[in-house]
Amino acid sequence: MGTTARFACRKMTTADADDVAALDLKSFGDADSWNAEYFFYAAQNEHAEFLVVEVDGKIVACAGADIFTDAAEIVSFAVDPDRRNQGIGTKLLTSLLDAVKRRGATFVILEVRPSNTTAIRLYEKFGFQIVDREENYYFDEDAWIMAREIF
Image (cartoon, rainbow, N blue to C red; front, side):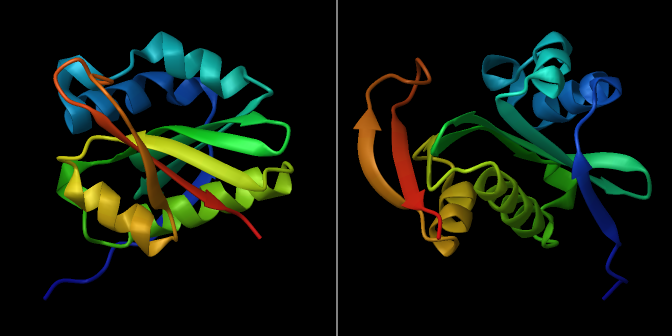
């Protein structure tokens, strides 16, 4: 078994937009990925919290949430497919939940494809529960709406 890579989580900047968009495309393909312009503006949005994880100076994961007073919606969560099952998603979700809690959120919601069982397992590990279904959310598939309180 090889050595575990060290990774660092930090706030996303506008300079990260191209790299994060490439990661999003690699993770989700053309249909579900966001472009660099979206991430550029998300990095400047005072009502959002976007984080990246780096391994050896390369962005390998990104997550973001929009914050609405006491609630947050996770709108983006991607881990490089080549870097999954290394604890990166766990670190990223922990950091994102801590960040939105510091900003006053007491409730978090997200949407996820029912076919994305890896993500669902991660969210369930963090106490998220399926609370609803949104039909045709992804055009070709419904979405599970998952939520949890933050204490």
